[in-house]
Picture 1 (cartoon, chains in turn yellow, orange):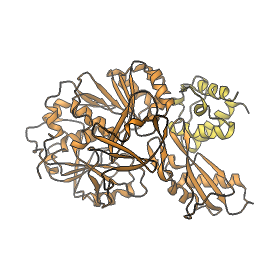
Picture 2 (cartoon, helix red, strand yellow; picture 1 turned 30 degrees about the vertical axis):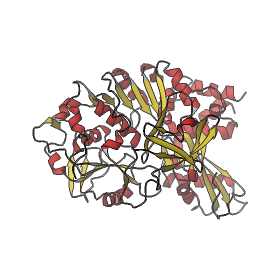
Picture 3 (cartoon, helix red, strand yellow; picture 1 turned 180 degrees about the horizontal axis):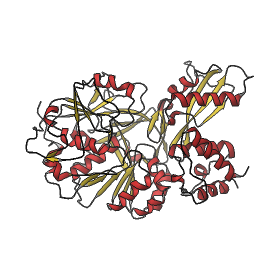
Picture 4 (cartoon, chains in turn yellow, cyan; picture 1 turned 135 degrees about the vertical axis):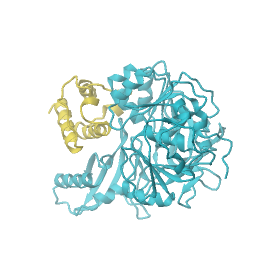
Amino acid sequence: MSIKLTIMEQMAQIAREHGKQLAPLSDDLVLLESGLDSLGFAVLVARLEDKLGVDPFTTSEDAMFPVTLGDFVKVYEHGAR
Amino acid sequence: MARAETPALRQRLSNTAPERFLFDRSERACYTHLAHGTCFGGQLTDLAGKSVLLATGSQLTSGLALIELDGVARRITILPPDAAPEHFAALIAGAEIDAVVVDIGSVSEFYDIPLRVPVSVYISPTDSLPPASLPTEWVMLTSGTTGVPKMVAHTLAGLTASFAAKPLDPSVVWATFYDIRRYGGLQIFLRAVLGGTSLILSSADEPVADHLGRMAEQGVTHVLGTPTHWRRALMAPAIKKIAPRYVRLSGEIADQAVLDGLRAAFPQAGVSHAFASTEAGVAFEVSDGLAGFPAAYVDEVRDGVELKVDDGSLRIRSPRTASRYVGSDTPLADKDGFVDNGDMVERRGDRYVFTGRRGGIINIGGQKVHPEEIEAVINRHPQVRMSLVRGKRSPITGAVVVADVVLKSAGNDAEDVKGDILTLCRDTLPRHKVPAAISIVPALDVGASGKLARR
């Protein structure tokens, strides 16, 4: 499965678990408007580390604060290389 | 007992410039109106000399009530928004509460307290205010204790000691991501009130974009929050609307990534991170943009505060330390006056960095979690032999909860059991305590004491 699909699937899963309504996912969706809150994203990053074997936020030297879903996916696509 | 030389909060408002406000999402309250007015209708006098539980739903009404009650009430116990209703009875008994202040958003009716007084955001002028001459005890609740939160008693003088002497700049506009009913937020609130400067509060369930938008409208200059608050704000496009001169983080470990993120977002601003706790008060502030703190801070007296590192944990002796725990004989400090909050530090070169908390306590976005509470829930599952809950580093909330679980027999379908455990946790625990991930492991380390080995 592509990185992007994995991310979207996990977002849907966590939204269900947290009882949140997920916005329609697109590259320019602002993450904070996706329906997941900080805790939701923290869980997402932890789950993605399990699924993809990488936490690009912690391993990177640079501070990264993605704003949109597209930015977020790119961080993982770069991290997985 | 008479009040010491610190004037009551309301008396400080008389010198405030006009047009300085406390704001929330829908209302604002003007300091100069409150100097000669009341939000309690005519009922403030009824609260004179009482031990008052402040149990409003909104931060703004809490703030207004605090200004009015200081010097009038014998004791104010501030109920944080996330306090668990099952602890109310113990808190009411422990703090000898005989009156409660509520607003339309209060979570309980508190029928068992003899006197209930409503507060609103509407200030009516009055010339019959009760004298504000009592040495009011301010009681805050700790977060993350198992069972009933500890009640920590402060004086207004102690709470304001770290900034009372600093000069006031009337052009400052504060904003806080913290709730003012916790130590970090209360500091900002008192600083704003004493300085006669406006303060922008958040409202419950307000999107961060809206809060940032309100900060921009008011021309915010000073913004404060936890690293988790700031990481969330840095992910919001609306962050570009504000251009503060000063931003500050505390309440969790500030890592280099969030400090660098703030520097990049606000190149014009001073960025500092502070260490404070409900018990010890503000210990120090670091403004060189680097994580951790200079090793030189230890074993010297700075600004009246002494730090030492003993057995790997940071100890603080300070004039701003709380006076005692209410309703408990547990000493707050050791015999030399040092407070140990269990914050573990490690020396790296000429700096100390925070490495976590003793006893495996996990800090999730400023909320402290005891692993034992979660393990107890997991261990209820009939297939579970034992479990270990620990924090896993998170770039968003500082940490998330993960669990390692040993099953009674190897034959179980691990995925099914994991799903069952998660359901069990979701049904019994608040969201931040539900493990983000569960690993089935063959065994866990048990120390010589027979206890689980925690880091």
